[in-house]
Image 1 (cartoon, helix red, strand yellow):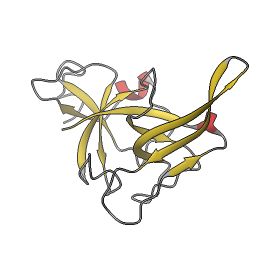
Image 2 (tube, one colour):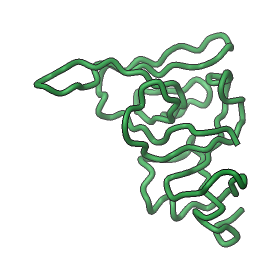
Image 3 (cartoon, helix red, strand yellow):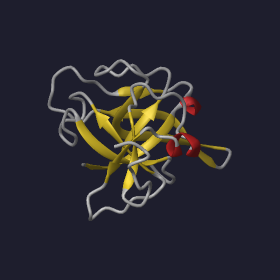
Image 4 (spheres, one colour):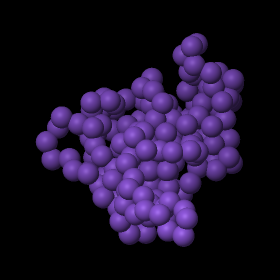
Length: 154
């Protein structure tokens, strides 16, 4: 449905194609979304939610290929053990070749000068399909952008 037909953030949330999205999601990009999806009655819409289609088999134990999924944009707090959509220029997702991927997030931290910092981030597929491997990031971790946290298949 188009923005003109939607009731943004009351019944509808924006829909994004992550394979073509560039940069971080800002409030302006969310407000200017071209397509919107109505959430089921038991879900409450809010400005930090968005929908995207997850394509591929790398998460098929949790997310079926082609499923429309609900995400919370720019989640705060720990991401450890959560399914997230991330962007990093070193990522080339085997399902669609883009710099975005949806995976289980695990980080290994070390203490430096009294603060814990990521030493290594592992993005783990959750699949029973052959050929998918962990994406291990050890360099340029500050360039990793967690775009959203997976909430539900719609």
